[in-house]
Length: 228
Image (cartoon, one colour):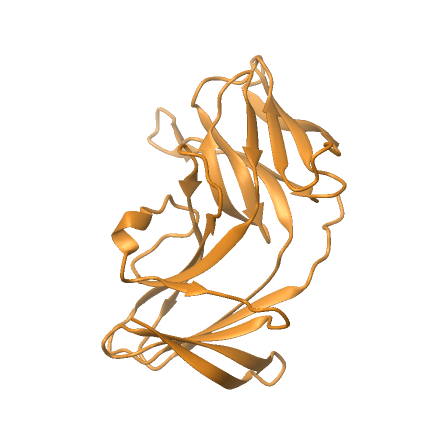
């Protein structure tokens, strides 16, 4: 399937602190349901005085991932799938499970009447809470819930971006309550697609609109906003 195109977003992280750690980008839905799980969306280990550049397209995907399944040798086997989604033309998909083969799969990608939501219908074959379903962006998981038979999962992808610094593993569940006072919101104002996020020695954030040349890796910041 061909991905659906959309404008780029760019975030440059500058580690002006004295500490090495992981910088993490994550998303929160404006209208989440109680059972939706926030995910470590993108992360990178960064040393003091180093910079990291994140770039992505705001393309959505339907995703499922199977829970870890341990085999006799102690190894783990997992499976997953991602299908491109588009709010106005391909925003409804069905998840099924082949019990004989032990395999999940998506099918029947189509347009739903409501064009501002993403729908995952789960048929009667889906086992209870043996997998997670949700939506991702730019090829990475972003929001998940437990899979359940005969349930339609509905995601309204109005999102806020956040940045945090600490210890993170990509695609792992994120306890947002532990990040109060440690994460900063990334607001892309109209006409702005690039931000510079700087962490100082006191672990305070400064967020600024930026002009970033991806070829020269040069950043020019404007209108800095300090986040306490």
